[in-house]
Each structure stands twice: as structure tokens, then as C-alpha cells.
Length: 252
Image (tube, rainbow, N blue to C red):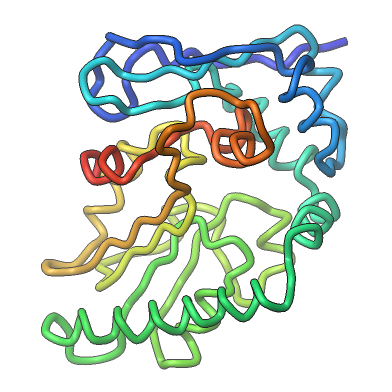
């Protein structure tokens, strides 16, 4: 059986330091991680390709940023998006955690974000708010922005999410052009191979005085995967970067 191949991130994803210390590690097909991975919905089952492969969660000795050292290489990450995380698998996962109350709360948060961003950008624009939602998923936030007259566009690399989106979404950042009054990244930084590099690229698309919104899970106190809550925060295939409020502010 073919084995998944990984890239070694041997320096800190935030400050570039090589002073990394291991917080925890294990095999993908053993222990709690193996059980959680098997319980997740998948298209193509990734477990045969992960047999014997190990994950390692590390922390930088200089800036305290935490992240998974070994991540799927570009070829295998593309396989994850195209074959493992199919539209049906994504829908099955979302159905398991979605409730009417959570849907209401998410819509209320999106409305609050839209109103806040309209107010924050009044002094730097004369027309509609131009907004880029990077890693926009199915486009729920973009749809809310459009209801308020924003000129809003989204980028998401998942073909499964783009095909089931509420609004047209682009696959690559090169498909859109700035400047934007607002760039949003809701629960995106934790997924990126090079989050700092992506932030540096996105800043070139923000208009002077513009707004950057970052949201990630708070991984304060999480040093290993011992529970489903830990797994959801630092999933070794998905949530490959673990942020705290302090570490996210430092990177921003």
C-alpha cells in the first residue's frame, strides 16, 4: 500500500527559529488519534495511507508558537482535498455538529461582523465596501455581505465546498484583485502550511487603513491530543497550527 508523504517544517512558522521542542507525538493509526480519525466521515479512507506514519506537535522556544511539524506534502494534501474530503463527507461532518441554535448564532455573528466592518471602513471609501473572505467555505458570510450591498468575493481551495457554495467562489488568490477595504480569515490560519507567508501576501491586497479580521480556535493549554476537544483544536491533518490569543497577535 502506498504511504502518505509529509513535509518537515523544521523552523518556526511565525518567527523562523529552529529552537523547537516536542510537546507530543504519536502514530496516526494508534491511540486516541487513530480512533478519532476512523470515526470521522471520509470519501476515500485515509487510514491505509497513514499506517505507521507519525505526527509531532512542537512549540517554538523563542516565540512560543505551536504547530504540527510534519504536514502532508502538496501532492498528498491535494489528494486530501479531492478524494478524502469529498462533498458527501463534508456534509456528513457538518450535519453531525449543526443545530438550529448554532445556525442562528452563526447568522447573528455574521450580521454583527458586517455592520461592524461597514462602520470601520467609512473613512477610507466612497462607495461599497470591497471585501475578500479568504478560506470562505460555502460562502455564508459572503452571502450576508451581499445582502448589505458589499462588493464581496471569496477564495477557497476546496472544490467540494465551491461546488456547493451559496455564491460564486474562486479557487486561487490570483483570481482576485485588490485593493480591498477588508480581508477576513475565519478559522483559516490553523489550516495553512505557511500562515505567515499567506498573511504577508494578503497585506498587499488591503487598502491603506483597511481592516484584517482573523479568527482561529483558541488552543491555550492544549499540548497533545487526549480528548475529542483536543483533536478538534489540533487535528494533525487539518488544524496543523495551534494559536493562542498572544501567538496570533504576534503573527498578525
